[in-house]
Length: 165
Image (cartoon, rainbow, N blue to C red; front, side):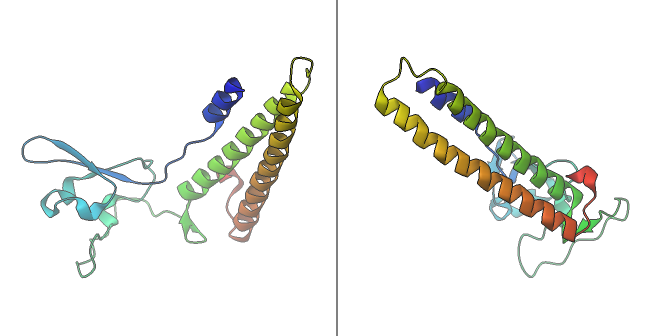
């Protein structure tokens, strides 16, 4: 039972969609925060965004406080094509996460079904517990498939290219 728990924890995706900002102050101390508003004003221009791929929007396009002037547009960067208000990297990231979630749920279900192949050394309560867990795992697989199908339908509506899926 412990092995199954460890396997499930290792297979369960841990995705963090939060941005983390890093900056170095005058004393050379490296600081981190998840809120750009918590970065002191004199360090905001030098703050680096962590946890975001290189294709994400540059940090200079973020206006942390209302009432501040909008930043200048950098013409040297290529214009990103948007599909339904979202760029290519966001679509790719969503499809990768949805596919990974589905695969991990299917792997967990397969591992549970494998455990039921040899019931000779298992108590009745353990057997019933595994059967109940299988029912929940099947429901998770169906839910993940439904989410992936909805994402595909949404991508079809916005004509998202197949290579991003």
